[in-house]
Image (cartoon, rainbow, N blue to C red):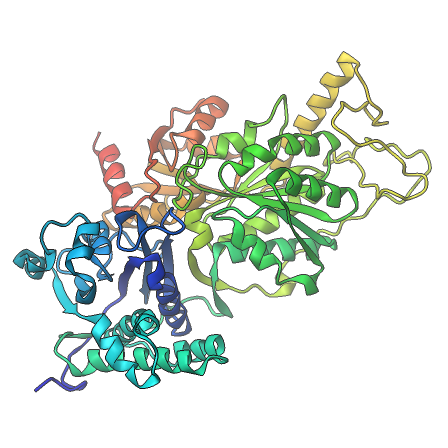
Length: 616
């Protein structure tokens, strides 16, 4: 007789990492996001890592068509989606082959045997069925179940065709894991009702599959233990589960509200930045205008035009799209108008690995335009941090009348974590006033503190002035070919951008104020560095972390902080771009740790490198 729910032991654990893997049509992203949302409602701290295939329509069952979604949920403070999964759900042989090496020894392995036929095995380049290997059951807690057959049985009463019915098998797998990890079904059932409310047959089938999965887990001997992860002791407040691209959009909207200006977003859809456009399109009631352009150049030029007309012009892109925008970004530098360029980085060069993560656009963002084209660069550290980083980018752009690059990446943009929603009162406004005085108007006269030129709205009588890519005369803005004036304007624009550093908050170090090793990072390396440094602290090592939001111009106090440590390690998902800046600008012999595999750093990986530095 199968054990009842009461007879299955309940084990309390502080964290679990689950990876769902299958074909891109298997609904792994939906399954993972539903598990994530449910865990967020239960109060767990969490972090996610969706992993998309690069091929839009890869052949079913092939290795390069595998889609994955990893979620880590915990009763403690966490910063990454986890180094290795405790649980792997493999919907077919390709998913098993691509992901099995990452699963922890002794981890839970759930395999859909219904997709392990001879053709499925051949597509994944298996000569023999891996499920016949006894080592699989020895090394892992193998749960081999025909999810296809179980799903067809569960939804038989709906009358759906087999093809349509099998689309529910991801919900059946989700129901099994909901029971195994003490998650309620209610949130997903409510979500299904909202999504398929007008398709009652589809709605019924999905709910039946979800409940059948929970029943199978409860009333069979497949699972020997039920696990529970308690809520995390997060600071009090209102939380929501948020993705990085969604947080960027919210931060841009909030920034424009704090500036008292409308937002214009011009973008060409490109992976993985497209979701920023999708998110901003939902904020029309907040003075947001979105424009889907035919190409990258049209998108950025339209955004510059919007800034000229009195909006905050914002544009977004990924990968090679930044190169296409470069000429127009130089135009924004020349005419000195606010512009925010959101770059959700991906692995390159050229088209590269469009669905994989990288942070190799730093030097391009700082220097990648013709001539001397200085531009501040702000970087996000995590999905929730995208909100504050976007606010910062808007503040700098409108305060200093300059284009700004906001760097995110696929790891951050597609990931999700709890976001503590700030109160409106906690956000400090930075209202902008347009030029109003027409007497003796000089379009390139500068604010003595920020060196920003006045923002004069076109069509205002008495404020007529030139814009365009030709060099401007100091003060008047007339076209000038004078050599000395050109050098003066170059220096003024450089001084203006360098002066942005005067507005930064003092740097804060996590860990000892001085010591053996400081791990310096920027962007999406934040979570892995924090995890590694925490482990070093547990082992009694003198290791600290410093993470940069403002990566250009470099903070004024960066050099003095770095000199307090014997060694500075800089992990980057590139070939060492920040380390080049630190060496050239601060003359500090930083140690570069590059990685360009389209994969993020793991905390254990960084811990090993830090331990090696400490030993030598």
